[in-house]
Structures are given as structure tokens and as C-alpha cells.
Image 1 (cartoon, rainbow, N blue to C red):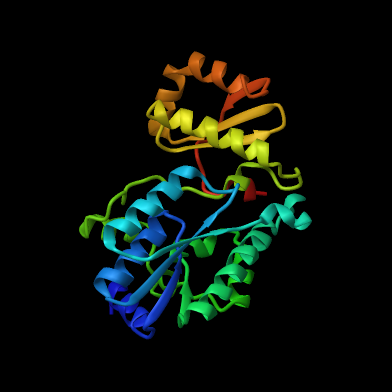
Image 2: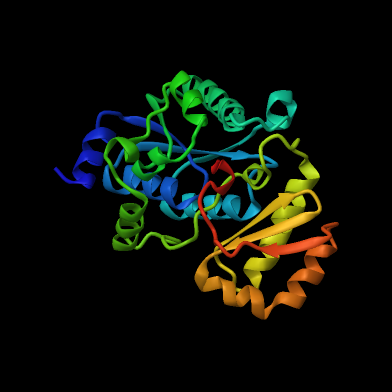
Length: 261
């Protein structure tokens, strides 16, 4: 049995499915597969929060409309939890707990059988304290259970001509700030603005890591040349936001680089 067959078997066990839909590549593929291929009754639920980018939200709205999936936006309030604001190593748990607790209340009220999320098989090697919150609310991760990797998802998405299959991975904006440094809405906002500026320069893969007065840019090897070509413009723009030093990490972009010990 291949990955798609396993995924079909998992999804087909449920009739009415709510999907925690971030607008990223993984949850987009899962949403498409569940609705179009498995022909299940699906609701997409997207969190609106200071920790997520406007670009992902715009994509989520566009894609759900395109494939005809009902789409609900919920406001999550991570910053009301002091434990989240302190930014401990298990920060992701408090963020996911806030998200899944609100989705769970909707699930019961709207009569859905299960909540899916877009965790894939490749994610099992990353540090993900949010998985504990997922377990507490019985959230199911079909891509992970079907042993479908990130590479598989991009391949299948290309096969089915799913919009944006080759978009770079994204992540919660709080992941740009090292553990132990308190989170601040204004810092997240300026990180989002700077990253949007860098992407407009054609730098597709980018993370702006915040280290006090130091802005550390992580990008792909392919995009590094674009950063250097636009060096003066980038430095001038980033320093407007209060950074004294602008650096480029020559090791390049790594998923969860702030988790490395």
C-alpha cells in the first residue's frame, strides 16, 4: 500500500472533517485531498493571530474559495497567556493549546467527527512540543500516519496541480525569536514587514531571526547571491526598524534552527 492509499484509508474513516488549515503547503494538500479526492464533508478553520503572516491568511482564503470549502476564521489570543509570552522551550504547546481548544468547541457545536492537522511524516524528527496539545484534543494527523513526507507532499501537489505547491515552508513568527526572550507583538510585526520586503526582492526562502539589536538573515544557498546583490538596500531598510547590525547566516536556512543545541 503506497502513501496515497494509506491516506485514503485514514481519511475515509470519517464523514465530516474539520481541518486546522494554516494555508501552508502541507495543510493545503491535505484539504485538497480530503475534499476533492476523498470527497469528504470538510470545513477549513484558520487562526487569525499576531503570530501568523497575512500572506498565509490571504492564500487560505483564496484556496478555500477556489475549491469550494467552507472556511471559518477564528481569533486566537496567545498573548493573553503569560506562559506563551515568556517564550519557554515548550512555547509551541501553549500556542497549539489555544488553537485546538477553540477548534474543539467549534467541532462539537457544528457536529464534525474529527479534527485533522497538516503534520507530515518528516516533522517527526523536529522538536514539536505542540504535539502534546494535539494529543490532548484528539487531533489526527493523516499525513504523518500515512508516512507521507514533505517531499511526497510537494510531488503529489504538483501532480494534482495544486496552487502554490512549490511555495517555501513558513512557520509561526514567534519561531524567529530565541527561547527565553519575551515575545512582543511589535517585534513580530516588524519581522513580518521585513520578511515581506526581502521576498519582494526575489528572496524566496527567508527567515529574519531576532537577536536584540542584531538581525540575522537565514536564506537558501540559491538566494544568498540575491541578498548580497541587494546588500545596501537591505541594510538600510532593516536598520530603520531599530537593528544596529544586519548579518547573513552563511550556514543558510534550516528548519527549526533555534531548536539546535
